[in-house]
Image (cartoon, rainbow, N blue to C red; front, side):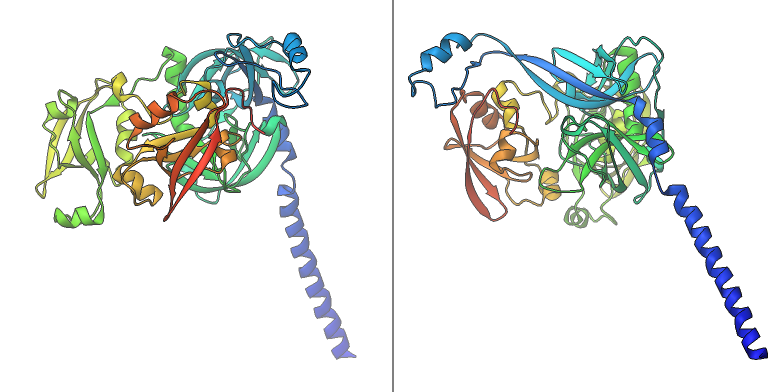
Amino acid sequence: MMRNARLLFFSLVFSALFLGLQLEGNTQTNEFKSLSPLVKQLSPSVVNISTARVSKGGSQSFKSPYGERGEVPFDDFFKKFFGDNPQKGFKRSGLGSGFIFSEDGYIITNNHVVERATDIKVILQNGDSYVAQIIGTDPKTDLALLKIKPKTKLPAVRFGNSDMLEIGDWVLAIGNPFGFGHTVTVGIISAKGRSLGLGSYDDYLQTDAAINPGNSGGPLFNFKGEVIGVNSAIITRGKGIGFAIPINMTKNVVSQLRNGGKVVRGWIGVYVQRVTPDIAESLDLDNDNGALVADVTAGGPAEKAGVKRGDIIIELNGNKIDEMPELPKLVASYAPGTKTKLKVIRNGKEKDLSIKLEELPDQFAQTSRQSPKNEIEQNLGLIVQEITPEVKRRLDIEDSSGVVITYVRSNSLAFEAGLLRADVILEINKKQIANLDNYRKEIDSVEERQNILFLVKRGSNTIYVAIKAETQYDGR
């Protein structure tokens, strides 16, 4: 009897403890069970962006449902009613996302969302539509600032601190993928400091929150409801791999665009490369930190300060340079005219130099993400780059001749044909491609409906890829 009572007592105690743990667990689960309150709070600050631009120089011919022109008896009928004027411009549309960062109507988005647009329409969550004006763009970071004139004060986002992010932190993306407005996806920060080969200032956050065409320019939020990134790029052949521009970089760029309409960056006038373990060993260095000076621009700030080819820059204004890509981003963060200190290693000894930063000249302001010069190149959807030692290391390629593909836009001709990032273009239409000038010359010579034959090196294999040039391609 006593034994049974004791067993009953312990059974009740364990049941109570188990129930308490369940209740506590349910309380914690209920707290994070739904992101609906957060989404309701944030969604009004996110906008859909619709763009249009006039395309010229190509014929906007009507394609008969029965066949190509000249092949069917009703060809003249279709031509008569739909026209065939190669000089007539026509509009092409695009979709993207953005977010309101001031209640008086300033909106942040990507440069590539509004690039070359002649009409920009911003659509709020409540359906209100406004014509937007471009205040300024910065192709180097792929950011743009728009302005609308709202009827009332708008709900603005709050900025977070992207420098404080940790890999594994939860994030939330809201945008306009494939035209499905105000779509919400959730994931984590997968990596930081990613370089995609799109320019000197690559510093992307990587996330597995679903990012798709149309999400470009939309916000990436933390679970506090703060914007910590601007969704910008995807890997077309990968799932769960999206990229966002850190908000700390965005704040600096947007502030300059708002105040002056353009971004002014500091410049020291050096060409730098990574210090490889082999280079470090040959120079008798203790480590491979810093940026190796491969060349010094004549008459530039570095030459005036006494920087020489072969110097290894290890500090700028007290900030250590561990990896080469850190230097151009750090230099760009300072205003022209700033007087600062460089610490270099020369002949195995540290040396301090005083340097006055100047404004980045236009001839050095070009990036690999340039505006395509014609409709065919725009629809091709490729960004290519010359093969430097740093590019070879980053993309794990062995070739030194040709140009390498660093970005393939989704819903583009190149994407449909199967070209991939890290493919090396060796020939175009049987003509050798040794550098960007060769590539540009051959692409500029291509005409509408002409086949472009690429010879591409992919890993250890060499393949041909044929693409029919189009000026009216909008994706399939």
